Image 1: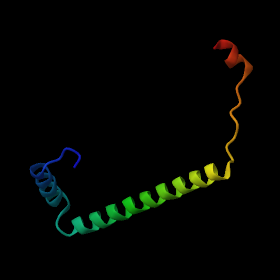
Image 2: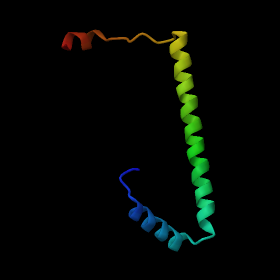
Image 3: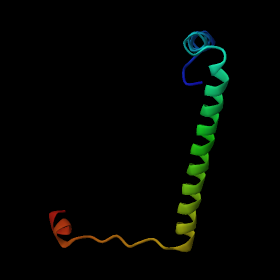
Image 4: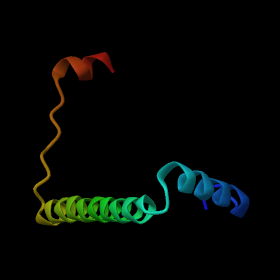
Length: 72
């Protein structure tokens, strides 16, 4: 899990509890969960859009300038 073991995770949770307090932790966790969910939703939408474009065959041809070809 990201190279974090149980002792490190416990220390992080204790520091968060001290800094934010017991009443704020659930609010922060809820906001974090909603943010992650929105990010996943956006990622799925972009992925679906890309797949639709590829399946429809709307790929734009790549234009190569003559100067670029001459340099190679």
